[in-house]
Amino acid sequence: MDYDVLVIGAGPAGYVAAIRCAQLGMKTACVEKWVNSEGRSVLGGTCLNVGCIPSKALLDSSHHFSDLQKHAKDHGISFENLNIDISTMQARKAGVVTSLTKGIEMLFKKNKIKDLRGSARFISANQVEITAQDGTQSVVSAKNIIIATGSVPIELPFLPFDHEYVVDSTGALSFDKVPPRLGIIGAGVIGLELGSVWSRLGSQITVLEALPDFLATADRDISKAAQKILVKQGLNIQLSTKVTAAKVENGAVTVTYQNAQGEQTVQFDKLVVAVGRKPNTQSLGAAEIGLQINAKGQIEVNDHCQTNIPNIYAIGDVVRGPMLAHKGSEEGIMVAERLAGQSTHVHFDTMPWVIYTTPEIAWVGKTEAELKNENIPYKSGSFPFLAIGRARAQGMSEGMIKMLAHAETDRILGVHILGNNASELLAEAVFAMEMQASSEDLARTIHAHPTLSEAMHEAALAIDGRAIHM
Image (cartoon, rainbow, N blue to C red; front, side, top):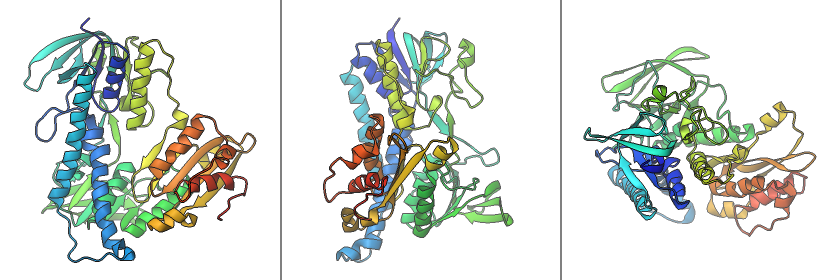
């Protein structure tokens, strides 16, 4: 065998798996086919190149611009002719991405991981054919193979991407000017984050969502409050709205949709289709080696990400569970450590979720609706950021923290946050749940003053009606 482990895909699942395998003494290679807009082969996958990282870079830039526009005067700051240079903003985003992709290359070199570039296709359970960018082919063999090929945007059958007027999330991250009228199909994580970016920069945003509930997977109290805030910010969010047709003509996109009022039409300068993603498993040659793939395109795996072929594993977006970068990374570490004889596993019950709007939306564990449906007795405690001194001082006091605990054992079952830095605050809740902590444990934990984390303390106290500042 050429290698102990071959990882197919160098996104956050694959490159992390490769590094951990190498750390554990396995001779490791990783093959990646991603080619950026400049035609250069790069590591990092969707997340780093056209997903998590570039979207956060644009969210940060647009937030600075919007904050200066709307709130600088509150701090006694005045200026004239505020404007934004989109090309400079996009160049900054590209710089952030490039620095991180080069960072992965350095990590591969540091850990002596063979960096292979090209498309991989199975020949057998232990052999993969790699086709490079220039068309040359080679065969690599490995004792164990980890599939981490990620996911791709779902394309509506009646609305193919033309990558000019009708775009996916990648296209929406690369606009060279602010579209006056931007339509977004899908009010999920991608749609809301992209809508927030361009709304702050001046686009008129319309979000068309087929489902009747806003952020149905989030806790209802949080999603209702978030919807009100986002609508107030300028996002026109239309629920129970099914897009049925669209056509591009005269430099615009005309969309036809059905809602409670019947058939409607609306016109946009650009249209983003953000209805979800699907596993990227089509070109692996899975059928030829008998690798089991379900109707959703997911590779079937057990709790330890092992496929029906014992030496082949699959992690990240290509398998069951949420399509989250950190979920894929943890699965990669788990597989690497199990190959080394350890007994690592991943707890899906403590998987954090984050939406990087302003304010951020973050949660872990059960929602109140889920607890009711599962007949689990619970207690609830909520606390608003409006009553937190640090939040008031920052001028970002919208939102709250809601905590759910078992009515009998007091064990924390879920924490839901709408607020500034919710993504960072959530880590305390994830750790507490991983350690099977009670709300009393957090209530007895001293939190520094003044901090946003005091809201976590107060929410824990509120479980038993003991919140101090409410």
